[in-house]
Amino acid sequence: MGKQFNSDVLVIGSGAAGLTLALQLADSARVTVISKDALTEGSTFYAQGGVSAVLNDDDSIDSHVQDTLDAGAGLCNKKTVQFAVEHARNAVQRLIEYGVPFTREINSDGVENYHLTREGGHSHRRVIHAADTTGRAMESTLADRVKQHPNLTIYEQHIAVDLITGDKLGIANNRCLGAYVLDRKKQRVHAFRSKFVILATGGASKVYLYTSNPDVSTGDGIAMAWRAGCRVANMEFIQFHPTCLYHPKAKSFLVSEAVRGEGGKLLLPDGRPFMHKFDPRGELAPRDVVARAIDHEMKRTGSNCVYLDISFKPVDEIKKRFPNIYQRCLEYGFDLAMEPIPVVPAAHYTCGGVMTDINGHTDIDGLYAIGETAHTGMHGANRLASNSLLECIVFGESAANNIRSKLKKTKLPDPLPDWDESRVTDSDEEVVVSHNWDELRRFMWDYVGIVRTTKRLQRAKHRVDLLASEMHDYYGNFRVTNDLLELRDLTVVADLIIRSAMQRKESRGLHYTLDYPDTLPNAQDTILTPDNFVTLKKVSG
Image (cartoon, rainbow, N blue to C red; front, side, top):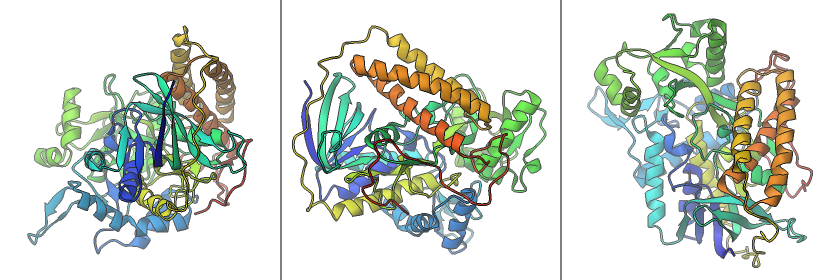
């Protein structure tokens, strides 16, 4: 039988958003952090580029806001963007105070400052970074501080099964009361009750066959919130990073946008550049434009990849600016300083998610969503490069501030029912899960990828409906496992992506369909509402 654990705040997810919130609340609350794998394993750790923020006098808040709005193709919530950009500098300063080792440089006057790079869609150099492993530096620093705080309890190798709400327990006040969580090692489901629950589980790009994301990015928070009755928005906008290394063993290895920001050129297999044909900004166009251009040229020429070339830069400069990328490329047989390297687009970022306001509120009292799990309106139809880590730290802090103001007047829920597995058995057909996992990721890649059509989406919807039916029966009859839970969540997220894409009768940002190639004059969010939705509060930016 599982155990029952209590805390003031339950954080599900241990990336930059979840750990930022946990640290902000640790001095005033008992905080529990659930991590599906090791504490540092997640998309934050693998982020290369940096954090976008207005940090020098040549730049401006208005410029950063405008660049974000432009990338978002008319769908950003301007108030949300303004809030994030205005709070960026202080959030970055807090990371510096925590000890994140951002890269420094000495200018022509002999003064040492933080080095700022420029990435696609940005009009200025405003991306602060730690060489080319910014996410690793941030995640490691935050994790070290979390481990040292006496009010923070960490459960690694634990995956959330589902949220526990008043509605599910037949209580009139439909508040989030906690979550059921599977201990992956001992295969026991425990009940975690808490005053506040925060979903910070990241995105869902493992729903695609090719992705830059680690294996834990299975959309768990989005799926759990949907099952609990929360609305989701803009799930059709899946960002495909233009440049992942093309090599059979280079699983999920992303080649940072900063390589193009520092002058890298995209080339066809015969060595000819092509980005100038698609956008006057060339390689510095937003990611949706670059990814679509690469996809077009690969299909036109029948090529398996295109090439990224920065070998015309001095060797020492390349090694200093991109030490990790340079070394990893060498491991796969490519010398970044001497030759173009093969690259392809891969699913990278979930721009939509659980609807929240700027404080992370969802539709259910006591339940918050932050980071890539949330839809705040910040990214619109396409995320601007390096705004993701920014979103994590800014909204992690704003959610923490909001929760702190409510801690004393919120009671801990009554003890929760134990997890009931009296009517289930161990599965003797694990092959069903692995087969369905492969099928899901392949049809999502084939039918709901960079370029879509109505017929492709209809095919995908038919397949996901069959898969959802199988998963419902399987989940009801067998004991839960990590693979089953992830597949169940990915099936929900795949359905949300497909349904959202089918509703949008235009091409905008990351959603491009051959059947509706034009952009409509009025931009509208795609909002999906679950059947069990109950309006508890207005969610807005």
